[in-house]
Length: 170
Image (tube, rainbow, N blue to C red):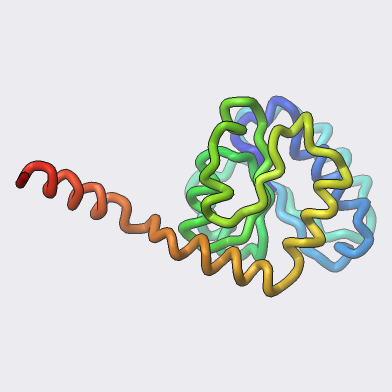
């Protein structure tokens, strides 16, 4: 779970709290990633310390190995910004939640086959939990994985270079 470097709405704590309440996730290892400008760090640590019998790893201020963390995950829950492109390139099935109206106008997550829940303030607890249930289905995750890697995001620079060369030779 990662909601960007700042997460001013504290989506991290809201959705972690919902995940903790889902008893069907008791054996799931949770990774919570916060950025350098996340101001609710102490509150989050207090919450995590209050949770018993759950595996929650807090990773603060990732600098270089975000892709390794992503690759070690079966699913991701993220804001609807640039991270969805990275997750799609890696084929990681994801749920995206928009932090603001600008993010909500981005539609790439749906193109990648991800579950886009919309604007944070409009996402109900039940919709979030229902989506967790859906993404836990292995066949659904496999479908999302295949769709997202079919977008071939890893060769974007070469594809753009080819398009430019095509235009220049016309």
